[in-house]
Length: 434
Image (cartoon, rainbow, N blue to C red; front, side, top):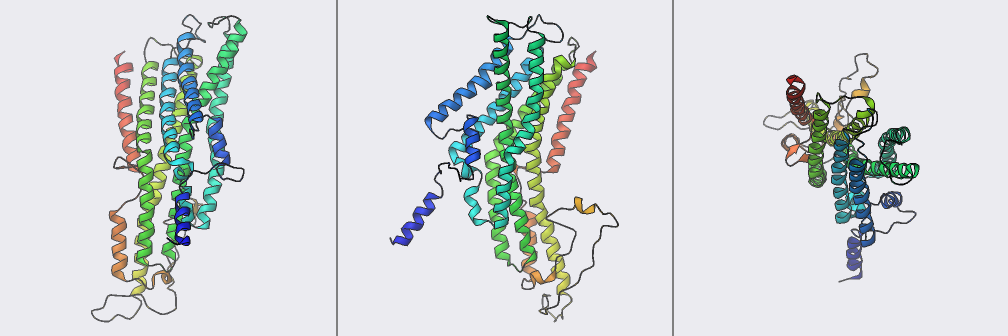
C-alpha cells in the first residue's frame, strides 16, 4: 500500500473517532454543558456519576418528596393531592429522555449524533447556518427551562415558607425545610432540563436537514443534470431515514407518556370529591404545560421538515411545467419530442403579484414559492427526463416517519382527533355521571 493510500485510510478512520473537547472545539460548550448536567457517559467514571445523579434527582428525591412530604393534614392551600401525578409524569418522561440521550451519545458520539461528520460534504451556507443554530440551541433551551423553573421556585419557596409548621421535618424546622426545598427544586430543574434537551437536539438535527433542503432547491435554478439531482435527493432521504430510525421510539413513547399524563390529570381533577384551587393544582398545571411544550417541539420539528421535504415535489413539478412551456416556443419538427430552444434569450413569464397585500410574502414557502423558474436553468434536459424525475418525487415522499407513519400535518390532525374523542369520552364518564 502506498503512503498516500495509507494516509487517506487513516484520515477516513479518524473521521469517526471521538475527538477530545478543547477550547477551540465547536462542541466545547456543548460537552461542558452535558458534563455539568451529568449526562456525559464518555468513560466509566462519568457514566457512574451520570446514573447516580439520575437515580438521586429523578427517582429518590421525587419519591421521598411524595411519601414524606405529602402533608395530608395540611390546610387547603398546602395539601398536595395531585403530587403523585406530577412526580410520576415528570419522572417517566425524564427517564425516557435520559435513556435515549445517553444511548445516542454512547453509541454514536456527539459529533456523529449531530451529523457534524457529514458537514464536510455540505455547502458553506449550510455549515455556517448550522453552526449558528448550534450556538443558539442552549439559548433556546434556557427559554423553555427558565420560565418553568422560576414559577416552580416561587411556588416551592412560598409552600415551605408559609407552611413550615405544618410540613413534616427532621430536627430543626428551618434547616430541614431549606434542604428539602433545594432538593426538590434541583430535582425539578434536572428533569425538565433533560426533557427539553433531547427535544432541542432533535430540533437542531431537523434544522440541518431543512438547510440542506433549501440548498437542494437551488439545483432547480441552475443548469443541473437529472443524475446529480437524484443523487442529492437520495442522500437527503437517507439522512431522514436515519433520523427517523433513531428518534422513532422516543417520539412514540413521548407521545404515549404525555397523553397518559394529561388523561391522568384530567381524571384526578374531575373527581367530584376533589376541591380544586390554584394552590393545589398549580403545580399540576405547570407540569402539563412543561410536557406539552416539549411534545410540541418534537412534533413541530418533525412536521416542518416533512413539509419542506414534500415541497420539493411541487418545486420539481413547477420546474417541469416552466421548462415545457418554454420548449414549445421553439420550432417543432414532426415526430420529435419538444425540446428547449437553444437560443440565448430567456423567456419572460408573467409576474405573479400579491394582489395588493404587502404582507403576503411572509406566508410564502421558502422552497416552493409562487414565482416562475427561469428557463435557462434546464435548457439541456429533455422532457422525458424531467417527467421521470417528477414521477420519482411524487412516488417517493420524504420526511420524518414513526414506524412507517409519516409525521405530517394530516397525521397531527388525526392524533388531535383521537385525543379529543378520548377526552370527551373521559369527561362523559366523570362529569357526565353526576
